[in-house]
Length: 202
Image 1 (cartoon, rainbow, N blue to C red):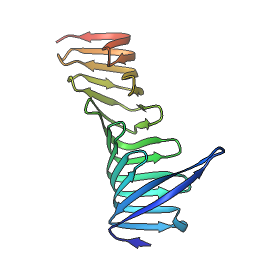
Image 2: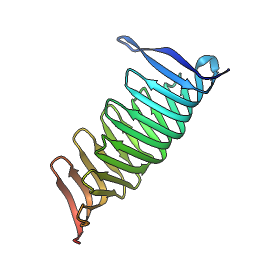
Image 3: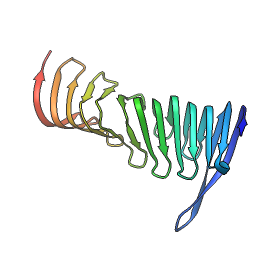
Image 4: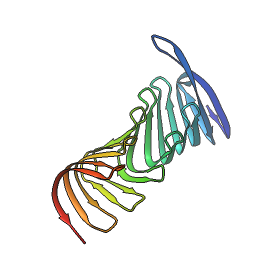
């Protein structure tokens, strides 16, 4: 089934052992395919809103698997979490609504409240724990022009503003370079803990 330039608004009901709840998903798309008795929806040139979670996502292609409660977005994906003021841009982004977990596939850029900018790939964002983590080389830049280059797995607690990484090197705003193993950095207090391997002063 195909439609053009319309908004599909529907309510989804989920049941738990205690109670039930509903949430709206709003699709605004140029074309839409609905299959499997409405359990699979593919939208093209779509703009999707989750009003209850204050999430907005635009992409060239979006798919909603109703049975799995799973959303997939592809090509020029722009994801905005208005509650946490986080913007994620990437090639492909999945959203597991049951776990409230976002996973990017491929190159990814993240803007945290215009304070921190993250460049990486295959990033996880746990909206429940408010943590971003991954296993690939990652660059985090702050608005003070400090660069945190994380060479392996990392964990960024957004609420506490704490970064943990196995291997890293930091280039501060004076171009001094610090190399660490097992880094823990508190961005709020500017405290750094870890095994310092090398320091290169400009």
